[in-house]
Figure 1: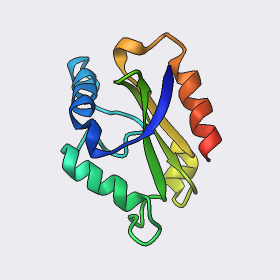
Figure 2 (figure 1 turned 90 degrees about the vertical axis):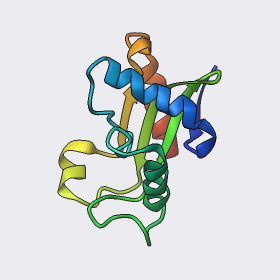
Figure 3 (figure 1 turned 90 degrees about the horizontal axis):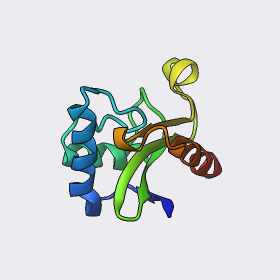
Length: 122
């Protein structure tokens, strides 16, 4: 069964495996990951936590929550739900929902589930 799980330290190994698959396919950007593609796991978790609170979110971003899309115990996708569009970049390009699907799970209509789950959380 496919579910959304709020990102947390418990999934560190699975998250690193997820990230590695993107890089193995020469994909350097993981959309909807809140910069997971550019940061170490620990630094990324710090950023995700800061982005959840209006008092600590960066001025150039929006309050957001990041979730893993899980199939059993495997991360097959990631989504960031932005609760407001506070910058022109977010308004014009990124929007309220950003997401990526693991390469090995693409073309299986997984993105539909990701979007539907994410939309319900807005």
